[in-house]
Length: 403
Image 1 (cartoon, rainbow, N blue to C red):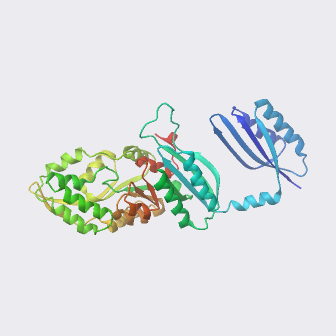
Image 2: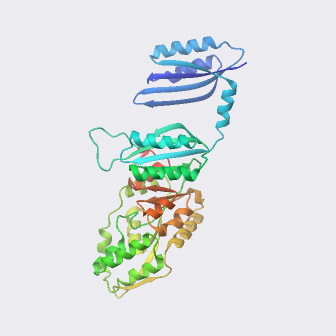
Image 3: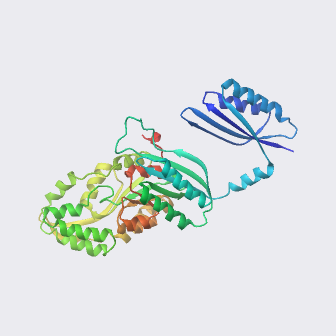
């Protein structure tokens, strides 16, 4: 009968340890069934599950490993594993896998305790934990710092909607964003990211800034809020707001564009996405003038938005062509994906308002970014605590991978 033994080695990490141990296993013709290693602050944990042939005596192998560990100054434990238990472990490998990502300025033990308690209640087993954010020096805490912990899970949640609801309660109460995704090849191979513009890629709502220039700021801002909350039809609200801009000098557009403030993390996110081959798009219910300005500034591939009609250097209070509303955004997203030969599962969409929900639903990964409550509750994922570059964590990107 074959013997299966789990070898656990722990202690101060030293170069050559893994090589030395596996050389012993090779010399004794042991078969490695599984292997995993982690190092945290120079402390090593190495696990090797080995199968020893029934014709071999395991004692010399384990003795050699023990002697090797002694030479390196590390601790070694041996645990026998029965064949039925190993078979049970093999069968677990077929269970669905999920990723939980915790995002905050600072991830606390309380965050982790509450989230992992929920996972346990829903029969999800944690088999790996990774820190994706970089190490922060103790004396250099700052307001824009980021913390991200990723949990790899196995299992089948009995009530997925209930699980999401419980996680959402944690985000609302304790200041941490929690993304729950199925772990799949598409998560790690997205190729297109589409952004809403106003209050997503930039911090302001451009139409509100234009309205201030003609003394209609409060009236337009009130309608904008209603539209973003989904209380009134977007097309109707846009026409009502643009009508109040009649007579505005075209030169004001340039003045406002030059003063636009990018959202935290926008430049880092887009430059990183471009460097690793992603396509990017602005799909906005705002205006083409500002979309093209950002396209030039950030090297965006596609821009679709609404065009303000200008006659003799002044706004007429009308929009030219088809209005880009929620449905139009989703259609444009699908059109770009088809043109680029990209599956929708490989598309990320980011927005904050109710008119973004159709494209968030169409994308493989829809993210409500600093969004209105109705959008956060409906979107697949939400980010409120960090900047746009936190999206990189949701696709498994680590700070150390930065260009």
